[in-house]
Image (cartoon, rainbow, N blue to C red):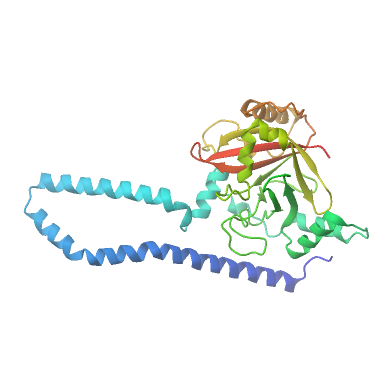
Length: 324
């Protein structure tokens, strides 16, 4: 398949612009649900505020200042509670989520096009006959160029397409395969990872849904008995079938930038055997149980990550080694 021409590229960009405008309109609509009630309440209690002001003018300055202090404290506490509850649904949600995951806003590093796409398309154009799962995956890739593989854990609800959009890191955080808004989103690969050839460690994020979908099952790996029943993970690409064996499972969290600690989400490519082995040491120390699966420098890993709530910005992590 030939690369996109200027017209195709322009159409693609127009679609992205329209999608962003639509999302901005929806966010503004959500934001208006907070602004409008505040205006209505202000108008309703305007006369009451005037009466209170008249009453306060008759009181001593100390009583007035004390009353204002109490009201200000209540306003701050109420605001903090509202931000805590609704903060991830307002305009600043993408920034909040992005900062929580990576420790900083990395949108400035976004690139124009998916560098993996052309490589996969070249492989698809090779005159070889494929069937079964590979044929299905290539069909999916033609439907959505962001598709890079299918993740499955037999006997669980983890059975989903995986997306990769380094030019738009969190495109599928709340978007379906058909590009429509979805609270469940889709599993997606960390934009810092390389594909074809793969990074030493591919990090895949997925939501922990209350209905048990997406990566909710992942937290079951805290039980050794569950691990023994589900020791294998399948992550097939559009060009090959891949099998992984679970090596580590642990609770962790997203750290502040100034915390000088090992951050599992920053281990993607090791610059040396020592760096790779240090990461393995950290994984082993954090792991809830010992799987006995040997991992060494040169092995390729995948790390599945989902949210947990045992601590602030908590995460549950499963690391698996490729075996075929």
